[in-house]
Length: 306
Ligand SMILES: CC(C)(COP(=O)(O)OP(=O)(O)OC[C@H]1O[C@@H](n2cnc3c(N)ncnc32)[C@H](O)[C@@H]1OP(=O)(O)O)[C@@H](O)C(=O)NCCC(=O)NCCS
Image (cartoon, rainbow, N blue to C red):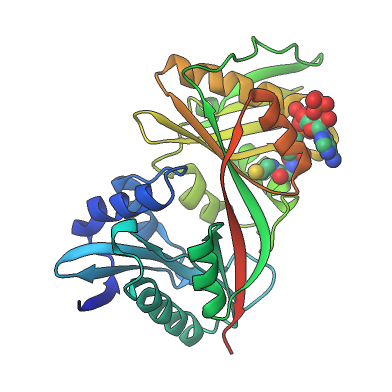
């Protein structure tokens, strides 16, 4: 076996989708989203999509980049995925080595990675000097068969809209996302303070379904939102749900998500996924209420690169 680790080329997209769907089936990856990620990466991320190729076949991949959107300098991200038919043969190690070299050369001092919460992946990370941090829970809702709540009664002054209604000027949604994202528990805190970067990475993301992304508007201002990615076929993924601080605990996240899920089912989506920090009690409570069930977990790991 001669594994080559190299940068992604457009012709790799179908194989990379196969790898990711096999290793993280509870996510949404499309060929278009891969091209988009490579094309639109912020130069400050020094982003590379590495792929591992063996005999002309792409069998592994990783997103690799600096966490330029974190307040703390030197943080970086790497997430190797190897197709289950090709594990145990050094492919993950080869990807990780190349990724760490690149990150260290670009000034990273710390690498963070998500590791599937199962013995082989956890042992792989431990042997390579990675220490466990927080856990996140993937949850699935059988959207085709679920009993969804009817339209929820909204507090006076609140109304439902969709992200598509904000197409002409999505800045208010950026501001809402920035406030909610700042409060999301996690190991690498994300500061959304660059509107152009948000437009590039969030608003123009090809998997963002603006019609299925519901906003709750209170007296003309966004109070809560549920942003949604879809694969355009069967799978719906909650990309971010948030409620502005002054409106929390009023049922608005539930209302936004209920509206979005109802419309997604009407549009033919059958599987809904979401991913939450294991200590994000309010969000886990909202998802339990809809009937989401934990389908897998992953553990954030960290390693000092110096
Ligand atoms: C998570 C978040 C979206 C919830 O928004 P919200 O509008 O307050 O949610 P709702 O009012 O619709 O529902 C909250 C539920 O959580 C429950 N809850 C709140 N705090 C809780 C806690 N510490 N433990 C357990 N349940 C809790 C509430 O009781 C409520 O459930 P109930 O209606 O059955 O009583 C909001 O806190 C937020 O924006 N957080 C920051 C961003 C974030 O983490 N988003 C999720 C990213 S994955």
